Image (cartoon, rainbow, N blue to C red):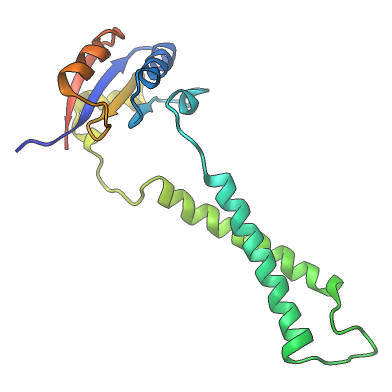
Length: 175
């Protein structure tokens, strides 16, 4: 059985891609993606994509900072308290450099690993790589792919919808 990944529509300008993405989102499609040879402002929003990476990086940084401060407080005030020169046991100013460093480390590691996970990497092969026309996505063409896993996807209806957007071509993408 020949499984289908989706339908790929080819456009010649970024404006046409933006219009197609907005129309597809308004029509109820949610599992779709746009491909262009350069960043197209507003394309992610038109496709309905939400970027959760900043929130995850913030959470990673907070966990790193709180963990660092707690580790220092526990080591100096609870586990092995030493009174050195009459200094207080809980001397928070001395905890700031390590707390800052582990905040940055936690945020950086979260950004690195979360970007891989959110992008579905590593993925050595994508079904679109088998479509000969898709080679031009890095040169001068713009593509909109509506995935077959979308709940609104129906082969004939989706093809008719894409044809109403006046693309240069519509290609079926095998899995």
